[in-house]
Image (cartoon, rainbow, N blue to C red; front, side):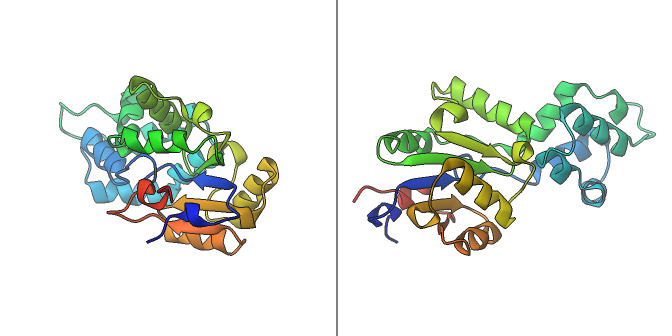
Length: 222
């Protein structure tokens, strides 16, 4: 595997966030909501998918308060177990904490590698994400003595702000247009195959980041 930095016309690098910069466990939030509600995880997943709560939140159709309200309403299992608090009484912090269990330990060396590239390339972030997650990632970065995402990158593009989500071609076109960059001078690193295909179809050099490799392997100096 060769470094993408070998490309002579490379001027811009766009990074995904989850499983590219910070490892994630996509099943963790629903697992934790199920435990809190004393419900089978499969039932919670079915409810979640039926109502498409996550995508509504990540595309800005609902805000923080509406997201939490939906969680309380949909997971309000009135269990016969007297030790189970019904979801309609969950505090904001309870919901936020469960939602943030998707975020695993952040390898600081990945952030440091991105920082090393700032003087040589224009760097951007493009993520399907939610405000609760972004606040938590920035909190983690600050605790590690690192810059926030908004400080680390020239521009950040969050799905909930642009009201679009990968792999829609429109979100990539939005980034290229807003940043004023050319597709053939740009690389994009993402862990999702569908996202990679969509970017590649627009002429972006799309790199599928797959374990055990990390962005450090794809961004080696040559």
